[in-house]
Image (cartoon, rainbow, N blue to C red; front, side, top):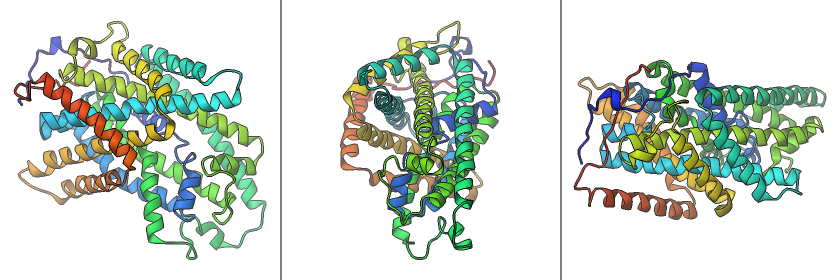
Length: 452
């Protein structure tokens, strides 16, 4: 399967470069969510035997290796195709296509599970409005806002980050008031969330870390905005690493405060909504406020994921891995891939009725981890295998990133593995049909210039 390139630049559809470094960081933080550890706080506490802070920080270190690989590859290929392009150019076009297909599952499922979660919670707040009406409203709102253009989306992201930041700041203040307003047993009380000698078990902490890693899934979406970023060869790497660090330390601070407020020795009324109960313990009105904040967080994550999905489909369409006339088109006025935004919105709405939240989340991890492994291998090939002078700094990060992701992938549930395998089989079947058994070129990669 050959790789065709050097297409005339004038014939290549272009996206508008409007995003600075902090726009990219905001996008990454919103997609991951500033409240990322809150929905899984109870699970992490029980699985890690109270060492939630430790699992979050270990997971941050693990994800930084993959974040570095993403950022370095974006320097070489500032393309909306992201992992699809990196793997296809550095390893093999067919493997790049398979990686892109796995990413499509990841990116399409993220807005679906966000719509499901928001619609269910909104129905709980306003039960007179049925779940289906909420799902239709949220999917339409996602799609309409994203069609308005990337600059509008960036402003909305900033507003969402500001709103969530205020609520998180209130939580820190009320948590501090609660903690210092109650008796505690000296330094041991403050160090116990990091290490409690009575409950620490290496196996439990590692098991919790495997779940905590999922807190960071979404940072790769920054690389899909390479064609809309100013100075992408510099800013994508910095933004990706900064996003992991910001989310990691913010998440660690959130769960640290939560563990001090609600020690692991005290069982939660409900594991799934444990953090909301923690917030309510610090200040009762915060119980409802935090629940609403998590709805807002999922709104930002779902809208951001739809942006990433549309840009990924654009990269695959422009490169002829998907029908180019539809997926590779750009709306001339706002310079957005409108067809793809509408397509993702329609699929997300259908998925909100066809899937449940748990299965959607598990399938999302299946696709994301395949893409992570592919990007780490692409970085290994580009910066170590093909280099005349081979440095350990170019070997260790992508190698560790690959094996960490592989370990997580093989430990997914059987349901996710079966559903993911079916999705991958459909994609490979389409590739076989399109190339008549891979006898003709499948992909025509196009890497735009940094200008525009």
